[in-house]
Length: 102
Image 1 (cartoon, helix red, strand yellow):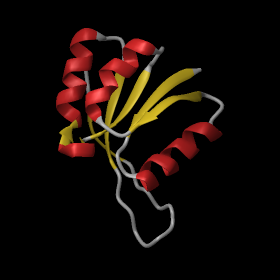
Image 2 (image 1 turned 90 degrees about the vertical axis):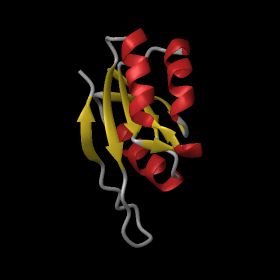
Image 3 (image 1 turned 60 degrees about the horizontal axis):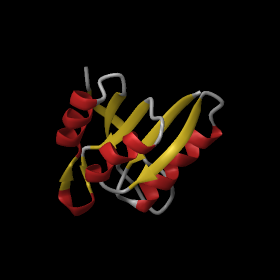
């Protein structure tokens, strides 16, 4: 299984994406956190293979900058930068891939 760290500050986005991960037979939700600044420490504490990182998180933290730091220290972790958008009141999060770290 691929261990996924989800970094998303909005509750609706976090719950929606986490739900999709939990339904998968291929992916395991290792953790879901709200700010990019805690992502590196979370990766040090648990095995993470993939990070789904919101480009802008809680406290206006920059997910792309956090991804660069993580890749420098933990180059084997794959990172996908995401952006969640919502329409209406239902869970209609549309995650768009903006940039994939090399």
